[in-house]
Amino acid sequence: MWSAAGELLRTEKHPDTVFALAFSPDGKRLAVGCGQPRADLNGALAVWDLADWSETRRWPGKGGMLGSVAFSPDGKRLVGGWYSGAVEFRNPSAK
View 1 (cartoon, rainbow, N blue to C red):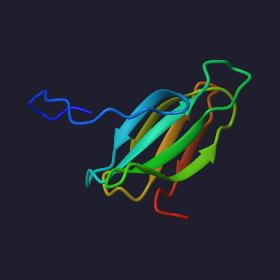
View 2: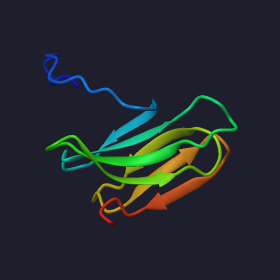
View 3: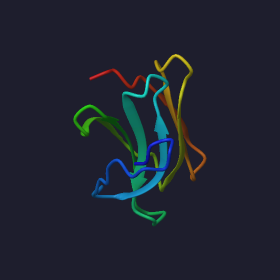
């Protein structure tokens, strides 16, 4: 992760291949579209808390890789788009 000035702030290792990232509007969470680059393996949609870099929520995939993620402007919804054509809407705060 880099600052707006281009300074490297942090490097994190993720156990899966990361295909898509999106910051929440308040900058406190990071949505991650991850998985394996094979159509027969399901990816996942996850949310990380940036205060302590912990994964707070993970939803299993709906077939293949997740290609895009986005938060709604108010941060109350998260959407994931899969290469299979599936689209999922999630509540990123739900446990």
